[in-house]
Image (tube, rainbow, N blue to C red; front, side):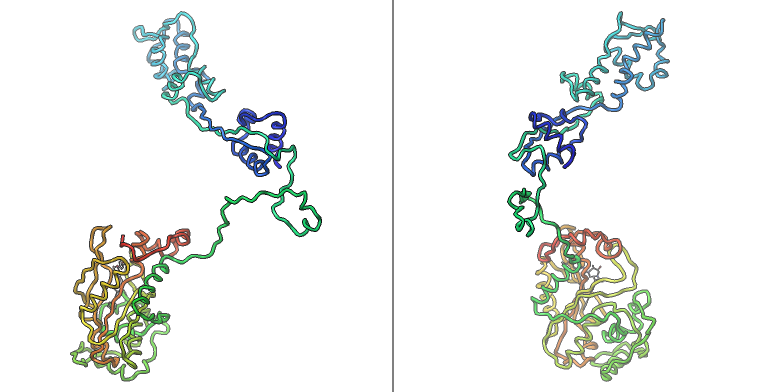
Length: 492
Ligand code: FB9
């Protein structure tokens, strides 16, 4: 028990406490409140809050109480100088207070001007009213005359403060000693019989449960899960994307990306130095088909007609898109071709300039739909249905170019919050040079589309810089406490 708790009990033993700020003037309010809370928990006291307003002096007012008001000190200087005080002398004597002092000394009728001097206009020494009023406030925290108090407030000589204090009376369990409060009933207490006389701390049913840290899903994973559920609901199977390093063959050549395409340059692609190359794929026929379709054309295509390099094709890269995975999966599908839907959501790497919304890697979301005699209209219709599931229902499609799809379309959505069209993805029909090279039947058409995971996540969480989402500057509190996300709300 604290000394203050004992003092409170001793005072209460004689009489109720009407105001703790009077009974314990030197004790901080917070200490009084803590002592009373502890005694109340034992029902030893009851208290009520007294919410008082009181006034305190500003530093300027403290100086007036110590040295006298500006106007009074000016009168003293004028009285001291027998034939009056030169006006030019006032700032030297009283500094900035001199100007204030003159104003109030004139207003009080204490001084008057005589040429370039100030002379006394009173026959006897007046009271320093301002200093006296401030002294009363210093001692009592208030001033009976509300008009005068308001005047001092206007002169910024006093500041209002809220002063909490308490009235206290005995509680049902009042005693001059504090019994130990038991918080747990133990086997020893039961066996020894101590439980019969023990005092237990009452349950605090208002106490909040302890926060148990249980880990947290990163916002990207929350949004990723939303997309995964949409894909599953639309009949897609998830592709295995746990291989970040691909050969140029799967990342570019099988996608009919020519070996001199700028996307394959060092400033766009991360090349692995050790090991630098990989083995040829087992499917010799496929390897030769790709070689032929690039170099001389095949399957109705005139190809690119350049000397295709096997070495170039076996260089190792960090995959620049998950379309490399789609290519592997479609190559597998060629062994048993049938209508299928696949999706993937995983990291891809691009050796590009970073900025507020782009880093050297991002998570690509990709969907692939294989079916007989699909048309471009089917792709447009699917994209409408796909994005409608995330509250986006105003789409526009713009012709675009991808080496592996023809026709290709960029997808735009109307963003009501930004009041403009924003790009939300890319799509197209995979080319025969890609599909027939892997042995898929001519009439099995394949649609592909892609978007990033970071962009929708940043929009949903209203983030302006990708570094608020990933990287060493991320605010871990945001990661732990960000709200759940629902994609099927308006894209705001
Ligand atoms: O994600 C993008 N934007 C986006 C997506 C969703 C969204 O909100 C959701 C609806 C609720 C808001 C914005 N973009 C694609 C567009 C831009 O952000 C663009 O600046 C960045 N793009 C990335 C690539 O940039 C180097 C986003 C990424 C992207 C682009 C194309 C594909 C995948 C990712 C693709 C593809 C594709 C095409 C055909 C066949 C297979 C795959």
